[in-house]
Length: 115
Image (tube, rainbow, N blue to C red; front, side, top):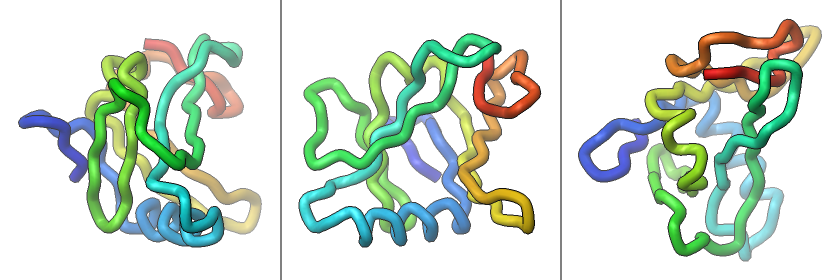
């Protein structure tokens, strides 16, 4: 469980943590973590954004669990509070899945959401 202060912000499954650790190992030594944010795009209005980061921004929320450091864009906090991040791999696709209790609508392709 990733926590900021006393509130639980994000749950990271072991599959997701393992995948992030693998990707971070390939990204290089100067990467300190993974930034999670949201951006305005997609047919439902918002989309998740994940990127490697070499340094934290001044107002990032920093959470760490299972050997993974996640830096959360402060503008995304209210949209992702309570989200579980999983990693799914099957015969047709692989990728991170966001189980967000704040999402009220999801697009058909699973790329965007609205709150």
